[in-house]
Length: 143
Image (cartoon, rainbow, N blue to C red):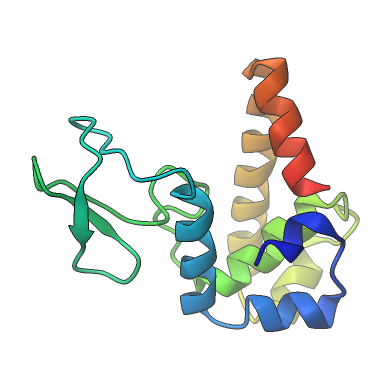
């Protein structure tokens, strides 16, 4: 999965990497906790497997955290692999793709695509409030 950050994969390669929700959750969990799990509530670093796929449960306070929590994909009401497709295209500077085109390609409502694309734009705009180091690491991941 690290190849996504090292190069610009073709559309077919991207579809293979994120062809289903399980692969997307695996990627999110791998990326989110690559430096280890830390409970958001109590700070504990020990965890066990959660109830849902790729979630982790703190062994101290029993708080469960999904791979999507704290990301733009949290509470996404449509399949995660479709959300990844939209996010990838928007973040790679391919904003010329309209929400109507996303809706047609992904078999989603146009308004759903518009709302998610807007959510991504807001997250990217919030990058302005990040420190220079944080911003550079995110841009490095996207390029």
